[in-house]
Length: 282
Image (cartoon, rainbow, N blue to C red; front, side, top):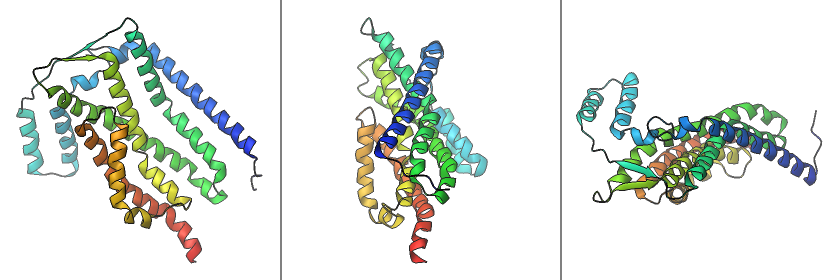
């Protein structure tokens, strides 16, 4: 059974419905974040202040320990021992409020960002549900797999930013100009962490976008391979725009994973675009 073609106004009405549902989901997520604001913002054990309490050496030891489960190597064991024995210099970072309404503003802004992350599954579902009518009948069976793949890459990007990029980059930024005390406004800190998580979550969707573009026939895997040098430049430009700070260290922490994801995206383009090519060939 074929779907009847819709008018422009009908598509516009559906888009409005999808946006309203997404906005409602974000609102609910924001309200949940506001209810549990103490668990999020407490400086001693709050979730959003966790990057301030994690040492970069602990992260590296954990990553090497995970790798050693699959690949037994004496070099990895020695690296773990070296990192455990290394005394990392800690930099005291003090968060302060510079205005009467700053705490309220920060709590609301950070709760909104957390709300967006909580509502991400619904927002991504509504996005794919809006695109679904444009797909052919035999292509719609890929809807649920693509939805879960999109959600997977977003979650991986957010986790990577929060548990690796932020804890590693914060000490580096704090170590600059050691004679200057690290007294950071809470607005700047929570904005840094929040937008870092969102930026990485969105940017990690690169393989999905490349696969979709190849599927609809705009570009194929051959073009992505041929334009790899241009893509490298664009990745660094995008990383500079997406990272909340302009320091080269955070930029590289985003650019390197994106370059890896670009290669993954080429594989996606090969898998999703090959069927369309075979139709024309055969």
